[in-house]
Image 1 (cartoon, one colour):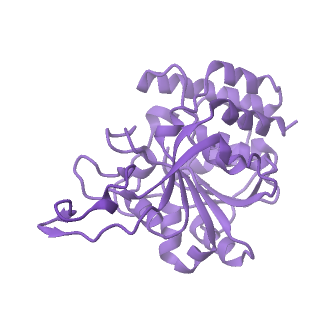
Image 2 (cartoon, one colour; image 1 turned 180 degrees about the vertical axis):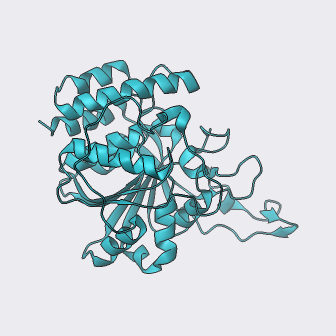
Image 3 (tube, helix red, strand yellow; image 1 turned 30 degrees about the vertical axis):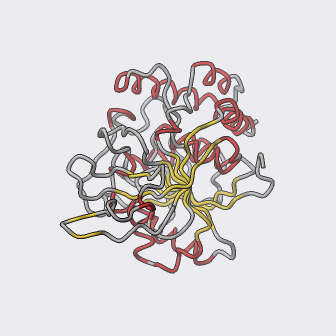
Amino acid sequence: MGIRSKPVKIIHDCDPGHDDAVAILMAAVHPAIDLQAVTVVAGNQTLEKTVRNALNICSASGRFSDIPVAAGMSRPMVREQVVAGDIHGESGLDGPVFDEPDVGLDPRHAVDLIIDLLLDSDDPITIVPTGPLTNIGMAIRKEPDIVEKIERIVLMGGAYQHGNVTPSAEFNIYADPEAAHVVFTCGRPIVMMGLDVTRKALATPAMIARVRSLGNPQAILFAEMMEFFAKSQKEVFGWESPPLHDPTCMAWLIDPECFTTRLMRVEVELRGALTYGRTSCDVFGLEQQAGPGRELYEGGGPLARPSGPNAHVAVDVDFDRFWSVVYDSFAFYG
């Protein structure tokens, strides 16, 4: 298939965040993406900080004269709030220094903006969440009619192996598991970019230098953000190169052949003391094989069988192809 010939219309829901910032910069400029709006949620930091970071990045792109940016949910649907200050710093986007943003906020709440854009669009829109799923879950709950207007949901979150905030859970899902449950059960096609693949999409020194060599302000900003991100990832996880999580969603939209995906049933754990927020991915289709002697039980009674696969889960990435997409995106800034 290669690079998409027809732009895909998207709403990017995010919580910037260094990797969210890169995803915004890619979506704003690549001709394969028709960016309809950026909506912001609390996650990597508090809403006040993620909104400020989004406005800074959107301003730095120079592409937001007619693309709305809206602030959304400041708290998860049910659980207490968590943030990722150890990874993204006190501001949520530590490292680069920004001028005063020249992009302002849309007066609508992000949940209402999402609803309005979907209901008013003649064509379905793809939703691209790269933070906690609170805005999307709330929009679906507030106005269920939007579901049929969603082309697909391409999200960064979850893992079928190891978490990054608990042994079981990835941050975006752990930050609002109840909202994630709403999204994964909404019935629309889902592409899940989890830690299993994003941990292979490493921002190596060579790749950072390659983008920086473009010399445009956005490429230099990318390199400055990655320098801080690399430092914090090494301090927390011991990695020499940071995983570039959120841009994998944009790369899949631009060139799906960057990734290998497998169709699975994904369930979000809401009650496990050790597994709260885990995405339980049925890699081998075991739950579909439940039968005599293999029934699923809870509280002494059998559970209904899951209704089948609900997500294309990324399991591998073509490293060079992925980085060509990232590089080409920043090259479009000239």
